[in-house]
Length: 399
Image (cartoon, rainbow, N blue to C red; front, side, top):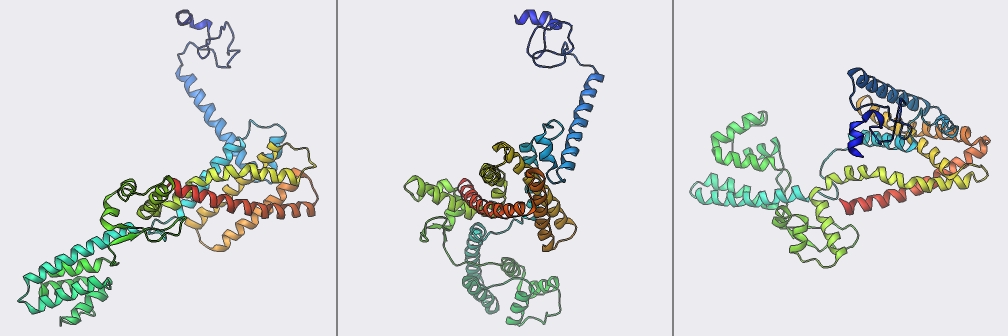
C-alpha cells in the first residue's frame, strides 16, 4: 500500500493517504492537494496569510475586549473564528501580567531566608579571627601592631563592626593616626598603609567590607507548619551539603518529617526565589478557581437559560481584560510614573467594566446588577484568598 502511494502521489492525499483525484483539497482532512513539493510563491503566500490572519484575530480580540461584554456576546452568537479562544486569551493575558509583575520583584535576602549568606559571613569571620590571631603572634614585639590586631579580634568576636568611612576614621583616632575626617576613603587607606603596613590595612578593609557579623555556629531552621524551633544544622553542613544530603545525615524519620525538613533547608538556602516561583504558579491557581466562580454566576443568574460553560466563558473574558488592564498599569508604574493612586484607579475602572459587562450580557436592571456584582465580589475575594493560600503552601512544598 505504502509503495503504491509513493508511486502514485497524485492520486492520494499526502497527509492522510485518502484517495483523491482532481479535487484541489482532500475531502477527508482538508489539506491542499500537493505532491509534497512547494514553490517559493506557495511558501510565502502561506506565511503571509498565516501572519496576517493571526494579526487580524489578535487586533480584533484586543479591540473588542475593551468594550464591556462585546467579546462574550459575539462568542455567544457563534462568532468564534475571528477571536482567540477564551482559555487561550486567558493564559496569554495572565502570562503578560506575570511578566509585568516580575518587574517589581527585587531579589534580595528574604524575611524567611538569607541564612546562606549569613553562614558564609560567619565562616569568613571565624577564618579571619584565626588570621588575626596568627598575625598577633608575629607582631608580639610591636606594641602598636599588637594593639590593632587585638582590637580587631575583639571587634570581630563581638560582631559589632560596621562598614564604611566611619569605621576607618574610628580606627585612625584610636591608634593616633593623623586627622582624616575631611579626607576621602582612598586617602585614608593610603595613610593606613603608610602607618600600619599593607597587610594590616588589607585586613582592616576586609573587615569593613563585611557588614554583618554572626556569633552562631549553627543554623536554626525556620518553621513552615510545626512549632519545632530546636532543629539546628552546622554552618559547614548547611553550606557544603544539599538539602537531601543534610536530611540523610541528620537521620530524619518519616516521609512528612523528611519533606518538611528538606523544604525548610531549601527555603533558607535560596528563599529569595520563592516569590517568583509562587508567581509563576499563580496561572494554574487562577485556572483552578474559574470553575468555582462559574458556579457562583450560575446560581446568581439561575433564571437565565445560559449553560454553565457560557458563564465560564464570560469569566475568562473578564479576567483577560483585568489581566491586560493591570499589565498596562504595571508597565506605566515601572517606566513612566509611580503612584499608589494609579492602582486604585485601575480597580475602579475594573469595577465599572464588570458592572457594564454584566448589564450587557445578562440584561438585568441596574440595582439587581449592582447588588449581584457586590455579592459576587465578596465571594470572589474569599475564593481568591483561599486559593492563593493553598497555592502558596503547595508552591512552598514544591520549591
